Image (cartoon, rainbow, N blue to C red; front, side, top):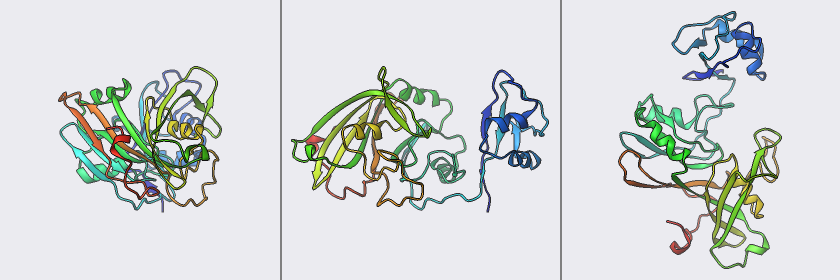
Length: 310
């Protein structure tokens, strides 16, 4: 059964027409993975319109810089059984904790099964927007803006690096780290760029654009519990930096080896966005939030308080 997005996706048309005779040609060239007959059907069924709601036809003229809306569809949308949690809410923000496997926003084979749509259904709030993103494979805290008047101030927290994010990860330890004194700290700075396939990243030569602090804070047999602080926000940064110290995150389907989509792992990626700390730009008060989740591969007590960053 076809699953249609509850809300439209938006695209802003380029400021210069590169030879498209109409909107149909533009969309076919912009999204080559979507068959032309699907775009034709969407036009025919009224699933494409201008941002103001005016419908468009296949032969509608390309209008530079105009915002176009369309409804994404997938043949079969996965359902993520694990629950999310609302951790905090006030007049400006909402903080939610998402499970592994649930995307923050629609994308790929997900159109309605995402944290954003779940929160809209929970709260009845239509004007809600994520201030930052987490990979679908990663569990943990995500900050949302629920007030358009203060939204820019919260976006600036991330743009200006004024928010401290702390993650937990579990990895199998190499021999060199199985006997070292704790905590053991690593500073990683390198340059990360797109790889192949395009959803992967790789370290390349050049000026660093990714910086992380990694701390091994506890051990249990061959497993290590890490506390990770990303100082920049490159895609897959923590995964690659953990791999760089010889500790790829447990059950990672991408690194160090890209696994087939059908591969069955013993558990979800053992990476958790555990804590967010910032000075609230509206109230001026310090805020600190901690995820109620625990990584399944570390069912032990947390590391000693002296080894953890507050």
